[in-house]
Length: 145
Image 1 (cartoon, rainbow, N blue to C red):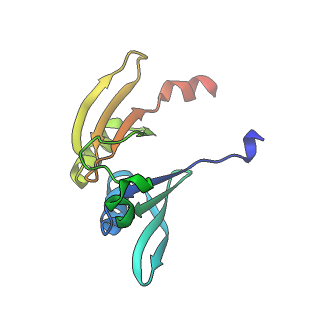
Image 2: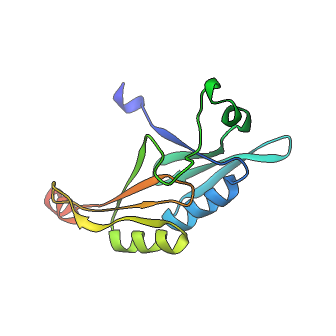
Image 3: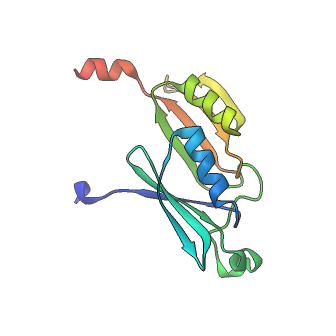
């Protein structure tokens, strides 16, 4: 069954900021728009592809935001006010980090070496989500060849 499984991700932003968010994810990380979804003529979400992963960028439902007892999903109200961290493995951490900052992300943690010996960094996107960048180990590919 494992080969039949794939994972997608839905990132919720404040209602009305769907286009701004999809534009940011394109500029910051190279995500490509696959399809836009509209409800009554208004943009409700954007389906994107980042590498092999499908990402849905959607606006949080204002009725659910107004009545939290109905349950979410909700958009982050403060930077880092999330229960999930989005992790990207990239070939060039400095380049990806600089590109994301130039697109509007803000610093959370500078590029550093973690306890596992990997080069990592983290940032906040303009919508409150945390992104962790991990540099792909180029030597692992050479060893496997």
